[in-house]
Image (tube, rainbow, N blue to C red; front, top):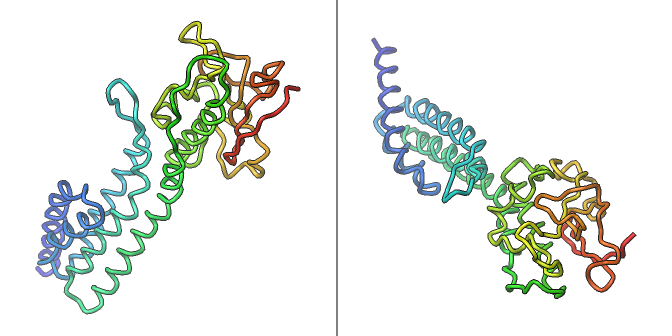
Length: 272
């Protein structure tokens, strides 16, 4: 009878926690914590098990969703960033269950679990926050031989590629679809067009991606300062890519071409 009562208490607490977590999960940290505490506060020793079940369910759901995309206004938006919030959500639910047990050790352990989950999420978000702070909108450029906007465009392409990588396990976009993949992170599609390229049609861009860097994990690249990412190119089409072999001759900008490397620095280089 006691075991049957325990199972019933576990199921009831898990169901209550799951129901409360649906509207509260969008509230950072406190939402999962309150949902687990309110749903499990009468469950006694079953509180930990109930909160763990709900935490596991949310963890699996967020992990699954992070590998998909949604269509917003005709643009595919990656749900990859959901992967980053899993530690905070799971930590909040587990902490709420520990606090709800009413046991003497539940409170300090719950606080430790909550802090650990939030800290891990914060650690994962730190590179994204840094890149967003570095992201500076460029002033509109005229389609002329003005070279002032080209280095800024390349810097923004690099930033967009890094934001993409942060959503896809540090993987850079595939070279044959790199424009398509980073458009949502670039915010302004004018960054795909070199201002020194005459815009006779909508299909003229002027930048290419280094094919050897595409679809690779950033941690695999030992010397990012020496690896070109995007650069001035004679290939003017969309998603242009090659093995760093299409620099214009003579250089497009006063005899030189602009290149952004995988550490983020932009350099004017002479044509080979």
